[in-house]
Amino acid sequence: MARIGIFDSGVGGLTVYQAIKSLLPAAHYSYCSDNEFHPYGTKADEAVAQRLLEVCLRFVAAAKLDVLVIACNTASTVGLDLLRAHLKLPIVGVVPAIKPAAEKSTTGVIGLLATPATIKRPYVDELIRRFASHRHVVRAGSSRLVELAEDKARGKTVPLNLVHEEIKSLFIEFSDHEKSVRLDAVVLGCTHFPLLREELLAASPWPVLWIDSGSAIAARVQHLIATLNLEVGPSPELSTAWVTQKDASTWLLKPLMEHFGFRTLLELPR
Ligand code: DGL
Image 1: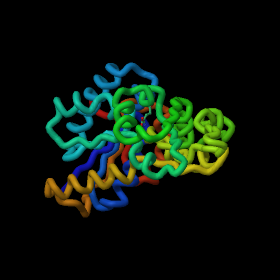
Image 2 (image 1 turned 180 degrees about the horizontal axis):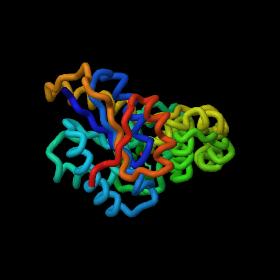
Image 3 (image 1 turned 120 degrees about the vertical axis):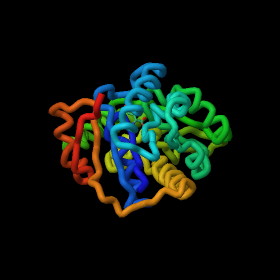
Image 4 (image 1 turned 30 degrees about the vertical axis):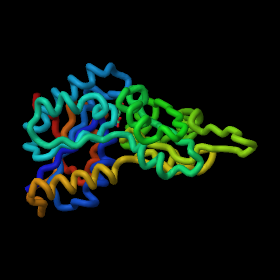
């Protein structure tokens, strides 16, 4: 029975979980949110990498995982090598969908919306150099959108003006040989952001393609499960979600977690 673990600093990984579950509905899933150290996107690279290793060691042991998915761009773009050096199981990371956005853009101007940490990573510079050197890439880092997605997951309304403030710097328009050129695709380079899809659509100055990595990661996990010959389903156990700190705010997540099929919410053993 394939036990797939999905890790994120918060609720963002649920967007990746959804994509994986649509391809592998009968697999056994565990979810881990490092809410104690959240947010990752404002912290130093080394601190994020060390914390990722520490929590994932605990998660893999508690949930007895076969496959670990790091459903967090901020963690994946800095911590995968360290994680792979210490953990034996297959690990799938998530990286911003620069390549598909560069391919799909017809105007040649694309945006990268991610955490302040991710937009500065050498890993991201390299992705742009390899796949989007023929494109103009505008970057915007936002931690506030991460918090707004966390609020939404706890049942709060997201003010559209705040979303607009965070994305407006991406919407550039300039003249090229007397033609007006506009950005037409935005990479959602943080797994929290697809949770705000409706708000992003409503707050955009003009329609663009919003591209995330969920389906690409799901396809990789499906391929991995087939290559490893792991059996999938039917799951005899209820799916469990783990948090690194149980507090009043965690309790507010219960309805959403249940909606996603995680009936049990536990504190990750130390
Ligand atoms: N969900 C995470 C990502 O994909 C980041 C959120 C945070 O800042 O903790 O980058």
